[in-house]
Amino acid sequence: MYLNKGRVHMNMLSCSNLKKIYQKQCVVNDLSFSVKRGEVFALLGSNGAGKTTTIKMILDLIPKDAGNVEIQEGIRIGYSPETPYFHPFLSGREVLEFYGGLQKIPKEELKRQIPVLLERTGLEECKIKVKNYSKGMLQRLALAQALLGDPEFLILDEPSAGLDALGRVEMMHTIQRLKEEGKTILINSHILNDIERVCDRGIIMKKGSLLHEWEKGTDRRSLEEIFVEKIGGAKRWES
Image 1 (cartoon, helix red, strand yellow):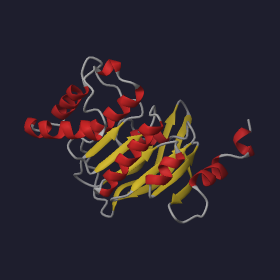
Image 2 (image 1 turned 60 degrees about the horizontal axis):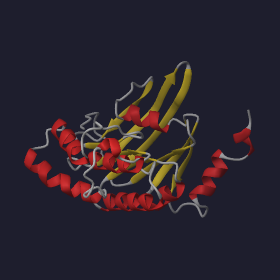
Image 3 (image 1 turned 90 degrees about the horizontal axis):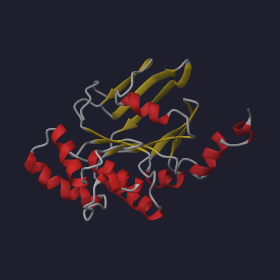
C-alpha cells in the first residue's frame, strides 16, 4: 500500500487537528500527534476512545471531517486491521499469494517472501483453510500480510487480540525485531504491559481527544499507573 501525502522529513507521520463525526457525535476531536521515523508509537485509550477511527482516517479508509494527515512521501505501508478477514477457502499461503498479487509483487519475489513470513508468524506448518483458523491465527496471518513487500511503515490495530499468553509474547518479540530492523510502527493495543515493553512513545486518548502524551523513561510510574490515573478513578464511573 502506498500513500503519497507529502514530505514529513524527520517524522514518518504527522496528524494535525483530526476530526471525525458519526451521527452528530464527535468521535475524534482536534487530534494532533506525530510518529518519528524508526520508533514504535502507541495509540492508547479505553474502548470507544477513537483509536481505530484515527487509524482509518490515516489510511484514507474513511474520510476526515477536518484536519490533515501527512505521511513520508513514497513509502510502502503495511496494515493489520483490528478484525482481519480473509477468504475462508484459501490457505494462509494462498492468502499471501493473493495479496502479493494485488500489490504487484513479482512471483519470484513472492516465492522468496512467503515462506519467510509464514515462519516469522508461526504459520509455516499450518496447511488448513482460513475458515478453520482461530482468532489468534488470523491475527498472525494479518501481520504476515502486512509485511508483504517489506514496508517501511507498519500500522497494527490490536495485533495481540485473540492471542494467548505465549502468542502475545511471540507477537511482541516479532514487533521488537521489526523495530530493530528499522521499521516505523504505529500500534493500537489495550494491553499496557505489551505497549510498555516495545513502544517508545504514545498518546492516551479519551472520547476522541488527546488526554496525555507518554514517553518511555520520562516517568517513574508504570504505564499502567499513568493510564489508570488519566482514564480511571471516580470520574470514569460518573453517568
